[in-house]
Amino acid sequence: MRHGILMTIGVCAMAWTGMGAEVKELPVPNKTGGMPLMEAIDARKTGRSYNPEHKVDDQTLSEILWVAWGVNNHGTRTIPTARNKQNMELYVLTPEGTWRYEGADNKLVKVNDKNLIPLCVQQDFVEKAPVHLLYVAKEEGWGAAHVGSAYQNVYLYATSRGMQTVIRGMIDRDALTRELGLTDGRKAMLHQTIGYAE
Ligand SMILES: Cc1cc2nc3c(=O)[nH]c(=O)nc-3n(C[C@H](O)[C@H](O)[C@H](O)COP(=O)(O)O)c2cc1C
Image (cartoon, helix red, strand yellow):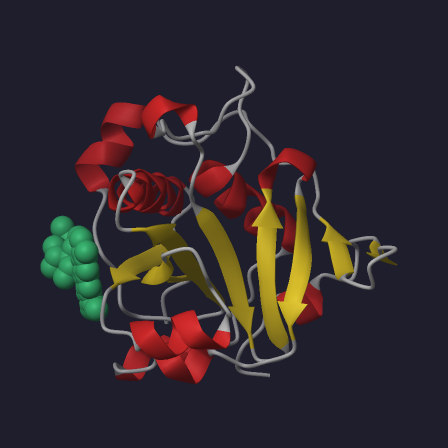
């Protein structure tokens, strides 16, 4: 299985909400430890080499999502947002479907059964990555700034955990926006791959 991620979330409780959406509860993120911040900033870099056999476990996925867009100790997000609007969305793309991260509840909600990864594949390494994040925001309301804060947190987490990551603008934004059924000016902005080096 080249795209290993949510297929491996066997330990996550799965449920169907009253509305019929499939939900995956994520493990509680471990908010302790890791590389000292100054060392992580110094070591941060883009990595484009992925071992497709080296899967990302559920605990790690939960922590990736939490650093990007979780709810922190103060009850706001792990990133600052303009006027605390918290106007960003984070999706996980898998071959079996697309999931939206609900940070307040530490869960993923399935939004469709589509494989949208091919709309992000414009570089050879992308298909090998086990985790695919998609950032969605409006151009107005500082959406791009919020996305930038989130992907930087993921970069620092990846550095701290010896993982590879790259934030990517080479995606079919219009097609992704359309396939996700985004309205109100929300757009697919950037794609981020994460995994372990080959
Ligand atoms: C907004 C943005 C879009 C990017 N898009 C891509 C991309 O589509 N493909 C890619 O391989 N790298 C992409 N990058 C990564 C940059 O190429 C990378 O950050 C830069 O070469 C500096 O390397 P460093 O991150 O190791 O410091 C992007 C970076 C940013 C900030």
